[in-house]
Image (cartoon, rainbow, N blue to C red):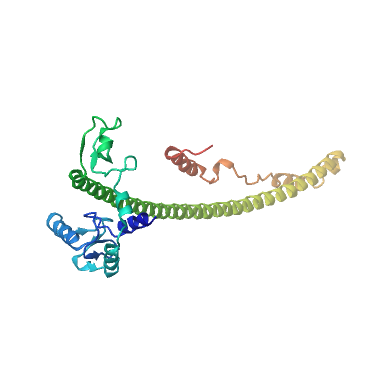
Length: 298
């Protein structure tokens, strides 16, 4: 149990660059700590290869040399950790093979496992390519560090791409909203114009209707009066013809004058084809133009 806690504590104070216990730890504003020598060398390398731009080897956030600060809290933990004495039994068990209780001195390149000399001779690893752990540690440490940096760069790039997509989505939403408002405003103007024209045309039609119907009513009254005069004159003429010769000739000139003067006056008519009808063809042309550009249900 103590060895597990010790191992966890060692991992917390391990330099991400050299993968060893921190020495003179320096911290960045992002919170990651490194050995003074490691981060100084890394900063110098970044300044030379990347035009003066330095990034945290862990999270890839940019930093300036002035941001490096001694981390006394971590330095004290490292100092206490180095003072811890592990019992001989625990120290032996840490690097012993669980199966054979021998020291783990070899690395099986075929299976990628740390083994002891008995494991190497076992059926499981017989014929596999094995080398000393010390020979492989530095090589794999470099490979793992490179893989870690590559993954961190990919992670940072993914975050930047994600942020870019978020900005693009926001920009598109704003543009669509602006266009939506523009379309609504234009069609509102068109609706207002159509409503105004509709009211104006209906008012013109109502005025025309009053004028025509009023004239027709006057003509109807005149015809009624004329019909009454005709009826009276016809009655007088029939009465005059039914009498004697003397009666017929009595005031005959007056009756003839009335017959001559009383003539039918035709009323004024309003032909439908002569009136200025509403040009519905204009609206049909507009609708037809919309149909060519858009699919409009009938």
